[in-house]
Image (cartoon, rainbow, N blue to C red; front, side):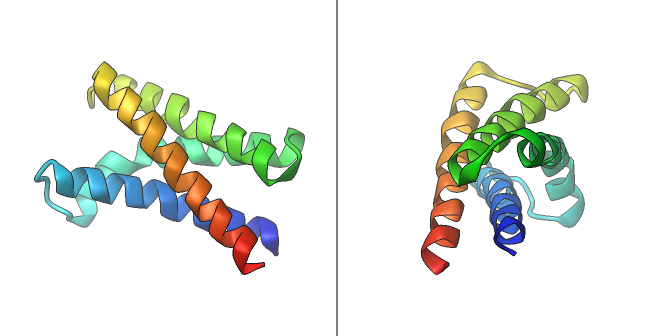
Length: 112
C-alpha cells in the first residue's frame, strides 16, 4: 500500500511541476496543453518507477532513481519532441522536481 501512495505522490508532484510552470509562464491550463508539457516527464516517471521497484531499496533510494528518471528522461523526451530544453529550464526542473518529489514522499512518510 505504501508503494502505491509513493507512486501517487510522485505523479502528483510531476503534474504540479507542470501546472506551476505553465501558469508561471502564462500558458493556458487546458487539458491538451498540460498533457503536451507533462507527457515527457510522466514517461520519465513511469520508467523510473519500473527501475526503482526492481532495483532500488527504500523510499530514499527509489526516490533518487525516480527523480533522475523524471528529469533526465523528461528532458530527453522534450528534446526529441522538439519542445525545447533550455539549460536554465533543465536546472530549474532538476531542483523543483526534486523538491516536489521530496515533499510528496515526506508527506507519505509522515502520514504513515
